[in-house]
Structures are given as structure tokens and as C-alpha cells.
Image (cartoon, rainbow, N blue to C red; front, side, top):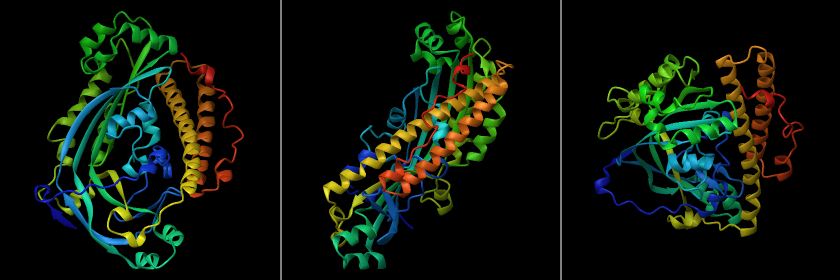
Length: 407
């Protein structure tokens, strides 16, 4: 590992391959729906959207360019969430490569539904960047350079992981659960949604602003930490998660939100975990997550010997698989949202008579989730479109528990 202060380093412009934009969400899903670990120098193929063995060897140079960012959003779609929390627009690079490693199951809790509204606090810290420098062909690269363009592509793809941003992310979400869609809409017309960020941290103001809303609604608190000592955050989360709070008695949930926010912003909490020496120690970098990974094309990075321009027809055929994966990921997100709703209803103990049916519905949803996750793995592992389209008999059937999701 080589350390280099950013003041003495003139960063080069790294080309992010344009055709990766077609698969923005396709590889959010991996084992248990988290992103694979990507190493600097690793090869990438656009044809089957896969990582390959490195064809280069080099030095990982750390550039100290830290910054911190805090913000909040109020319920969004998947695409909006990643635009807001990663800084990439909806036409940005593949999420598999920019490092969206937090789980789709957690993410689904924060997304917009017909019966819930979520205030999401996002605290991001970038410690610096690792850049792959002093590169040269390794044994695999030397072998590929003497082969045909097609063989070079099979061995080394068209690009390599050239730069990674290291840091940590902390998410805190407070979710309001409503009886049905109409109840949610009435709340939105009663309360100025833009005020919710302030309301969710102050019990008296929250109760004052919501007193004219007379229907039943509940508040829950959750969160997720990526990078740093996440066990500290998880322990705190377990302490404050004591079940749903009725909208008229939000004290314990608002207290929980504030405890999590204090953990995020105080020097002795989350911030202490991600503080670095100058230069950083190796073990400090191991404590961080890869937030983003950028790719560089071989022919734009001084490695013309590995150049293998792709046939546009081949690239177009590769667009088919990500589009199918997008459909499956949307279905998975929807199933996780229904699962979260059932868990909320069981936790809130709103209907004793429906508990057996809700538990049975939970089993049905878990079964569908497992089927979809297996199908996603098939799609990722094969460019055979027919295998990827393998039908699941009950995938599109209505859920038996659907009529029980209101209270």
C-alpha cells in the first residue's frame, strides 16, 4: 500500500464506461442481496456483466480527500433513493459497481408504499480514495495480449476497477404506518410533509402538529450502518426498538430517533469509529466500506495491448438480462414491503383473530422471496436468456394475505 497526500497528486480523469448505465440496479442483488466485493485491478466484462480475474498488477495508492455529508429524504423510489444517497443520477453507473452493499430488505423498509411514509436520515463519510497506480500486465494479461480480440475479451473483459472511494454510511429511518391508502393521503393533506424532519425529533411539536389527524397511525424506528463498528449501532438499535408507537403517544420512538442521531453526530459515537490517522493505518482502512468503484477502459488507460472493442450487437444483447433482473428486483422489493407490513401488524398486535392468517401469509412471502433470489442468481450466472426467464408458477399470483394488510 502506498500513501499519497492529495495536495501533491494531480488526479487523472477516469473514464466511466457509458454502456454500464443500462444496468443501474441489476447487481444490487448478490448473496443475500448484497454487493460482491470488488478489488482494485479486477477485470470487468460488459457482455455478461461479470467480474473476471485481474489482468493487471499495480499499487493501491491512498488519496486523503475526506468529507462528511448529512441529509434527509422523505420516502422515495429505489432510483430516487440511490440518486439521493450516492450522488449518482438515475443514468449513473451500475449499482453493483458503485458499492450499494446495504441489503435490499432494509432498503425496502424506507421506500414509498401505499400505506406508509418514511423519513430517512442519511449520514455519509468519505475517508479518501484508493487509486490503482503503477500498473502493468500480469501473467494473465500477458497471455491475453497475444490472443485474438475475442479471447482477450473472454480473459480480461474491456475494463478494470481503477478507483474506489472508502468510507461509511449510516441510515436512520422513522416510518409512519397508516390504516390504508386513503388514511395516508389524508395525513399528507393534514400535515406539511416538509416539516416532518423537525417533527420527528421533537415530541411536543409532533403531537401539536398531528393533533388534528384523528385516525390511527403508528410510528416505528429502524436503521442500518455500513462501515465502522456496526455492532455498536446494532446494539443501540436493539435497545430502542420496543415496538410501534401510536401517533398520539410517540414519545419512546422519538426518543429512539434522537438517540440514534446523537450516536451519528457525537465525536464519541459513529464519528470516532471512522476517524483516521494521517496517513491512515491499514487496520483503519479495513474498518471502512467501499462506497463507490469506478471502471477505466483498457484502451483509455495506457493498456492498448488488452483492447478488445465490443461488437455493438453483442452489447445490445446484454441489455436484455439487466432488464429482466430489474423486474425481479422490483418484485423482491414489493415482497419485502409486504413482509415488513405483516411484521408491523403482528408487532402492533392489532388483530388477534387474524394472527394465524398473517403468520401463514408471512411463510408464503418468505417462500416467494427465496424463489426469486434463486432466479436472480440464475440470471446473474448465465447470459442464457431462456434460463433467466424460467417461469415461477406462483410469482404473479395474488397474495392470500393481501386483504389483511389494512387495520
